[in-house]
Image 1 (tube, one colour):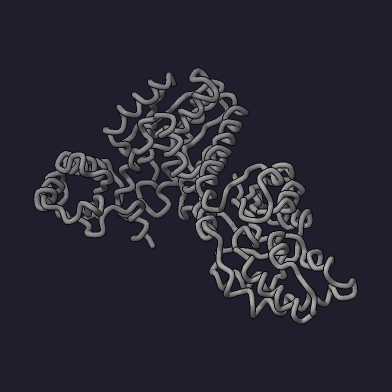
Image 2 (cartoon, rainbow, N blue to C red; image 1 turned 135 degrees about the horizontal axis):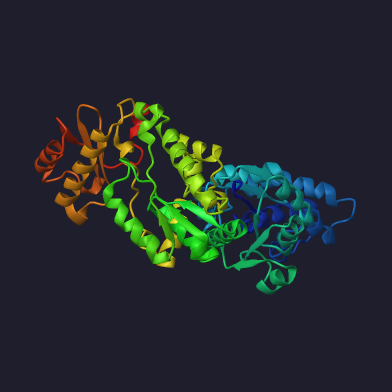
Length: 469
C-alpha cells in the first residue's frame, strides 16, 4: 500500500521573502560593530549559513558572537516585516489536498524560523532548523520526504544526497542555469506554479506505479461493477496487459441495479475484454440480511469467494478490485477488509490514485465513465438494522427509476433511502426545493413505500453512516 506523501520545503526565499528583515538586521549589526556591511550584496546571496556570509567582513574572533547577536536582533527587526512569497500558502495547501505532510527543513535558527511560521500562519507539520546543504538529507530521509522544494543550489545538494526529487524555484539568488548545473529535477518560476506541477507529477507517477503493478501480475480478473473506479482499472489492465490477459466479472444479484448492467457490458465489450456475470448470493448470508454496520463485509466476501475460483479456472492468480486511495482512508469500510482478507488486490489504492485522479485519467483516456456519478449497490439504500430483502431492493429500484424519469437530465446524484416504514429521497442540493415534489412523492409511494419525503439537505454520499453514528 502506498505511504503518505511528504513534501519538504526550504524557508528563506522559497516560502518567505526574507530580504527586508535580513537587510534591517544587517544594518543594526553593522552599526553595533562599527563595520561596513554590503547589505544589498549579502541579501542577494541568502541561503548559506550566516557566519559564512559575515566572515569576510569581521575578525575571526568576532564571527560567532556577531552571528549570535544577529539572531537576537532578528526577533525584533525581521519577523513582522517579512511576507510570504507569492503562492506559498497555495503550495502548502496543494500538499494538504493530497493528504500529504509538510516538512520545513531550513538552515535558519529554529526559534526564528518558528516565529515566521507562527506569524504568517504557514501550515507545516514539522520544522527542522539549522541544517544546511547535504545535511538536510538526513532529515528528508528520516521524515520520508519524496520531494524537496528550495531556491538554492545547496537545497538541490540536500535533495540529491537524500535521493529525493529536487524542485527549485527562481525566487532566490540562484539562476536557472546554476540550479540545473547542480542537478535539480524541476525548475519553477515561483511557488505559484507548484500546485499545478504537483497535480501533474503525482498523477503521472501514480499511473506509472499502476502500470508496473499490473505488468508484474501478467493476467488479472477485475471485480467490475461498471462504476468509474473499476471501469478505469479494467481499461488500465487492458492497456497494460492486452485484453486477452484480462477478464472482467460482474456479480449479478438483487443488489445490482438492472440499469447498470447493459452499460457495463458495453464498456467491457468496447475494450475487447471477456465479461463474466456469475450470480452472487449475498442474500443467503445472515450477516448481510441483518444489515448491520458491517453489511458490506458479507457482500464483498461473497463476491470475492465467487470470483476467485473463476479466476483460478482460467489460470489467473489475481483478483483485483477498484478500491481507490480515498476509499482506504474513508473510515468505516468493512468491504475493503473482506476483500483484503480473501487475497484480492487493490492496484488503484496501492498506486495512491485518488477518486479525482481516476476521473481525470479516465477523461484523458476518453472513457465514458470519467464523470459517472457514484452508484453504490441497492442495499446501501436500506437503513442499517432494517432487514435487506429482495422486496425492499426492488421497491428502491422502482422508485429511483421513476424519480429519474421525472427529473430527467437535471438530476445527477439520486438516492431513495429505505428507512423501513418510509422513504427519504436525496437529490442534488442545487435542485432543491423541487417544484414537482408532490408528484415525486406520489411516484415513490406507488413504487411500494407507505410514506416518502424529500431530504432538504440534498444528496450526501454515505448518509446512512450518519444514522449509524
